[in-house]
Length: 186
Image 1 (cartoon, one colour):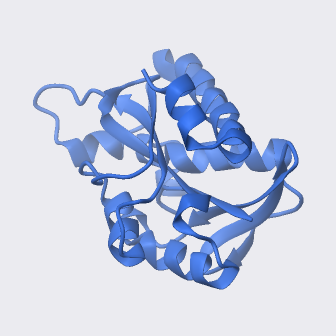
Image 2 (spheres, helix red, strand yellow):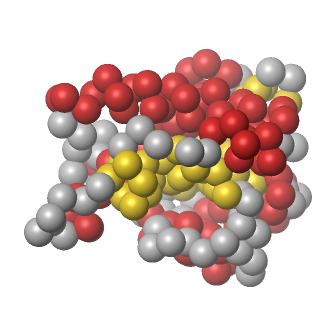
């Protein structure tokens, strides 16, 4: 069993914001591979999926971004998910829009939802797929930027990026993190 977590903020107010790109990827995975409706478990929306033969749980924490670990860590405990079988999908304003980057471990790089997960898991060895939403324009506050919506001119690229993240997540489930780092980074 593997667990794929998409980070974002709950509620209509945040739907479609840059910070919720993780939720968008999970939504597309549910549409394509899910085996039922999302249900509330472990302070998040959860469902099961079959990613080309690999059984995976899909989770969208409903705790708000900065407290994502309070949903992820109990889910890992309950379903006995080891850190290497966890993938966190999150936004990264330091990556250019359209870029993706897999990492096996490391710092949160300023992503507060990922930082909370790392802290609650007690290890930075948490695989993650960072999705580029940047760069932050000059004179913009980063928090205002990530809570903003993509422009109409960015919509095709965002749709393509979410699709690529879905394909990359299926590859992670079947081929592992090394394969994905080699194929999708850069």
